[in-house]
Length: 264
Image 1 (cartoon, helix red, strand yellow):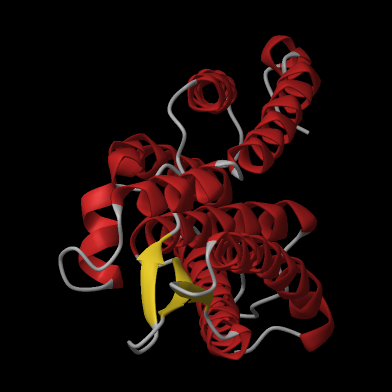
Image 2: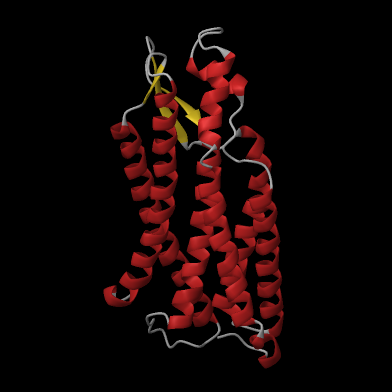
C-alpha cells in the first residue's frame, strides 16, 4: 500500500531542499573558482562555460531527489514490515508518525550527505578553457584532502544506523549515549578540519597534466591559479563553523534526555 501523499510530501520536500543546498553551494564554489582562475591571465586560460556546469548541477539535483524519494519509501516500507511482523499492525498500513518521519529523514539525509561528499571530492570540478585547447576540468577539492573521506563516510554511516535503530527499536538510553558520542565526534572532526589543511589547495602536477601538454603553462601561473582557488577556503571554514555550532546546540538540547532515559 502507498502512503497518503500529504504525509509523504513534507519530508521529501525537506530532503530535496537539503540536497539542493549542498549541490548549489558546491557548484557555486566551482564557478567562482573558474572565474578567479580565468581572471589571472585570460590569454592563457579562460573560465569555462557556466551552462555546462549548470547541466551537471541539474543532473545532480534530479539524481538526489530521486534517490531521496526511493530511500524514503524503502525505509518507511522496511519499518512497516518490522511493525507488522511484531503484531503492532492489523494488516492496515498507516502513514508514519512524526517520529518515524524524522527518523527516516535522518537516514536518507545521512546517505545523501555521504554520497555528496564522495561526489564533491571525486567529481566536483572547475570548468576551464585553455587557449587553443578544448574545455577541461580540474578538481575543486585538492587530492591531498582525500583522506577525510574515510571519517566522513564512517560518520554518516553511523548516522544512518542510528536513524534505523530509532526507526525500528525506538529510543533507549544506549541510543541517546551513542547519539551524544557521535555528535561529540562530529564536533572534534569539524574542529580539526577547520584548523587543518586547505581543502582547495590543488596539486600543481595534476593541474598541469589536465590543462595541457608539458610546458604549456609556466609554474608561476600554476602557482597563482591554485592559490586563487585556495583563497576560497575561508568560505568552507565558515560553513563548517556553522555546522560545528549546530552540533553543539543539538548536543546541549539532547543532554537532558540522558537523565530522562528517552529522546524528544
